[in-house]
Picture 1 (cartoon, rainbow, N blue to C red):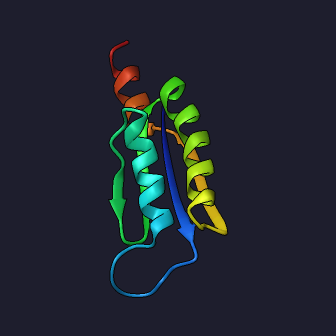
Picture 2 (picture 1 turned 180 degrees about the horizontal axis):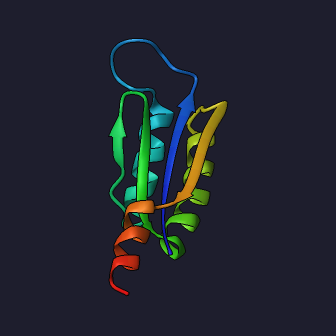
Length: 89
């Protein structure tokens, strides 16, 4: 099953470079072999459930250890991938 997760780490630090906890979250996902979409308002990752969910668990630890005091996350089934699979039948 293909899933997509979107999350933000807080606190936000205004303009300039993202905070250390945002980079820690991104780097944790990269070390799991995934390539996140890293942006100023949040990060997204998609892939197979078996790869994404354990990577997210590790990311939570790393972001909290790096100073995040809140992480807001949404995980959903990736509708685009589901729609493509349905067309094959």
